[in-house]
Image 1 (cartoon, rainbow over the protein chains, first blue to last red):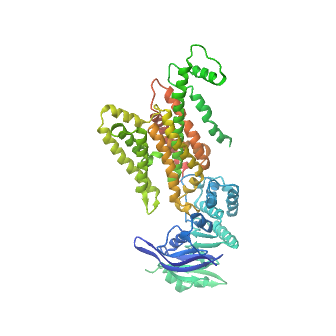
Image 2 (spheres, rainbow over the protein chains, first blue to last red):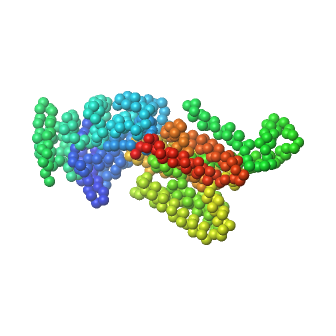
Image 3 (tube, chains in turn orange, brown):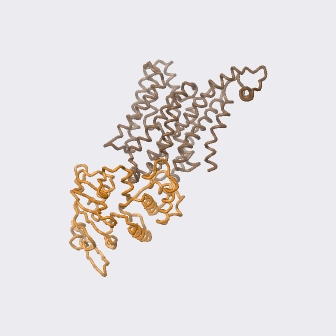
Length: 256
Length: 333
């Protein structure tokens, strides 16, 4: 069954079209990476999938249900979203922030189970020692990890990540991807926007390349061709493929 | 845990002790003691004590005033804590959204033009001003925080201008009444006032108590609220209605008592942390106790009674400056 399905999805604002009738399906338990230039509509597409934006035409279904017709709590149990960056004015403790991920299960106050799930998520991400630290005084990378723990505590079936690597150092990037592999082994579906092509090419994922509000290419690693890179990113790149590893070396003279 | 339960116990001894405090020359502290001994244990007082007068003063003047002070403090603080979390700004107070200027205009109008009780007019206009702010801020069915603050500033400005017109057209004698009302005071506290404010304040605070944990969620941001399962606009309305209601009810009875809704929530957070699960109930208990304490001072510190609104601002102002100075260590960018 398809975890996510987009049909003739269109979106734009202020007279500018951002997505021009996109169709795709994402299989249950798969790992999808969205690629494209700045302004190609990747983040918009992710926000449409999360139900943060409403499509002007077309629809998005999760497990066969129109996302914009689901109640908020039901939607949150199905799909989680991680923004690029986040901060708060109030110095809540890390634990207090993580437990807000449980909102769709909570009517008045978190109970013992919610606290247990939050602790479990913090342990999984490796931030349990930050539990009582004020969230807004953490570094950007640590805050990112807290938000990852928050979405794990939420326990959705599908998790959407918008540029999760932005604030992570190399150590935490590696930790992040081993975490992703662990999440995937538990039958989650993951969709991720990634800027860095070289990192993206190292992942074992399904790829969707967006260009100009349309899907330019989709498939496995074989879509990393000189042609596609040129078409989507307007960059000439040297592509080396060695024992399944792809190395992309863009030529630095970018075309107009 | 120990320290927190103190906050809940605090109001009881404070209310009890406040019964003994008052500017009255005829009734001494010891007279209240005699009256209590007679009421509780049936011990007769010395002949020179007129229990009838003592009873009247304690039950008809002091007790309603104590309850009014407590409820007003509780309402302003609870409302302030909730709105600060909802608007995600620690410098917000219940008056920001036009409540105080709307209520002041309503009160002035009732005192001069309308044939209407001051309290009702203040309440209606206060609520009206906040509704106006809210609808000005509403865009495509969503409320952005920034437009809400801006609308609040504009609505406040308009009502202040209207108030000035009313004041300008009023004779000096009535003008004095308006000015006195705006200062905020508990001088006119009565059982009628208590009755009219108790229901909205208790009901509104109870509602905020029920949704107190959601304040943590909404204060993280609209997207962060939406993606974990709450509709941010619905939640904001759910917070806005009771916080406005309780603040309006207290303004209608006691006038504009400044700084309480702004400063006391911060005192509480500094003492017990930022989790609204604790902040909201303690806002009610400690906010009420705080204003009652300040009122006891304002009643006894000088020969004549200083309006409590001036007192709270005099105490709150310097504290607020202190708060601003240490802001960068506590609050994020």
